[in-house]
Image 1 (spheres, rainbow, N blue to C red):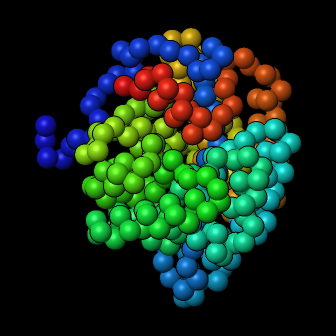
Image 2: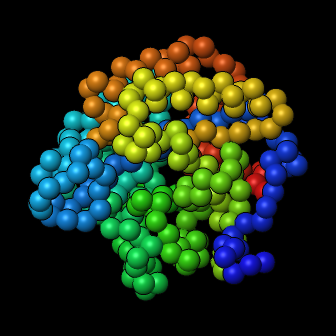
Image 3: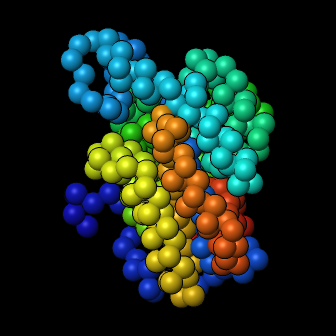
Length: 293
């Protein structure tokens, strides 16, 4: 094995794996990963609506902050109407800087998953000791909501070479950073296997809308087409579609209607092959039945 290999999972073509069902004989698990994020006012990382000219970058900071103040609540309304629970991917600093937001996720029954401390800094830049301390701090702070998080998504999907080992040692059961498969797989760590639950970097509003300059109608079409294709394969294998949303992007007023129409169509079709679920429930089912390759 070359030194450039990650040594976390072996190659496994999806056509050569054991076949199994999701609960109730369903074949396509769909979940929503909603990213609740905070950023630094005077610097740090952050998506840009347009290039910044000076610091502090009021335009882009305020655009991102809109998601926590307005967009998140608009998405809550949508998912309440659709009767869907989501996986709430929470920066721990949301608890301090957006009082009531994380609690609202908990109170509506969303799964609480960890998303680092904030999205102003990449996790992979930390030393091993600092990363371990950050993971412990995030876990402690989010556990104050009443449920210890068991899933992790790194800010900016940033990882050090030690991250899977540190997360497993800290008691995490699954991660969502590795977009290498349409099924849950196992990552090797120093403390045992860590489950990887698929989280799409394609059906994800940041790459689609911020990077590729699409709009919500195009993104909604991507969701429809992805579900159509995955259902066409579902008789041969169980699959997962994780749909990644950010309230400051998809929570904008003009983007909610196209998203709502696509999701309402899928919900009204009531396809019995679809399991509307959370990342944690997927992990629970896979672990309980020892299904991951």
